[in-house]
Length: 141
Image 1 (tube, rainbow, N blue to C red):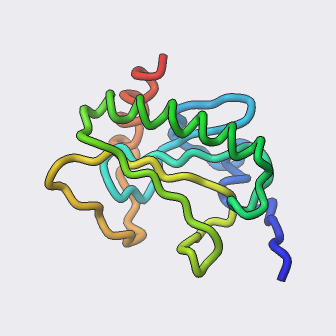
Image 2: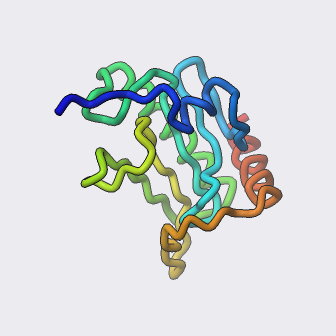
């Protein structure tokens, strides 16, 4: 079955500015913003601006640009939040755990002894997301 990209997925709408986000980092090729249902403090999503359903249909160039943005955001998030480490995750297709069908990478700052929160669908307070976004943006510039 061929993979089809849905131009109306939520991340495509965020790229087009139709849905707001707490932006952390942006280039002409990638966008990073706070996950509204974080599994840890400072959880950021990094996405390509190119139409790519997931890693399986993205071009090598899209993957390379995405990896560069993930590294920038990861270093900044770890520094800004004084994290002990990072978890970087990427899921492909429903069976692989993918929920939004636009290529995205989760960058989650990690702290010794603090487990990841379960994915409950619980949305974080917007003020908290804005504060994390500001801290991480400051560590990038």
